[in-house]
Each structure stands twice: as structure tokens, then as C-alpha cells.
Image 1 (cartoon, rainbow, N blue to C red):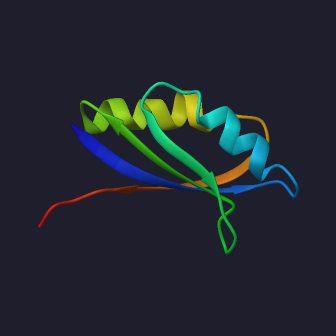
Image 2 (cartoon, rainbow, N blue to C red):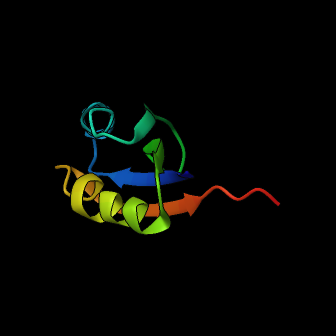
Length: 77
């Protein structure tokens, strides 16, 4: 199982709607609107890195109101 944090910037005033929409995507553990340089932070999981990448590109980035994403895979050193 691979987990990652997805940091999201949105259009002005869209953070809550984006977080709510992303929270419905299978594989998303948590989606919160936050303050700071990013507007939404998501924790997601998938069976493989490739599956995680497909989820981000095919589902997360397609949500209306997103302007930029940054995916940060969780590592255990």
C-alpha cells in the first residue's frame, strides 16, 4: 500500500467545494481545506505508485476549481 499527501491550490473561494469533491474519490482517506500556500491537503492511498499516479491525474486533477497539485508520497526510512 502506497500513501501520499496531495497539496492542492484552487481558484479563489473554491477550497471547500474542491475538498468536498475530492473526499468522495475512492482511495482518498482525508481531504481538508487549509490556510497557507495550499488550499486543500489530501491524504490518499493506492496499491501501487502507478495506481496512485493514475488516481491523481485521472480523478483528482479533473475536479473543477483546481489550479495546481503537488503529490508527496509517504516514505518510511
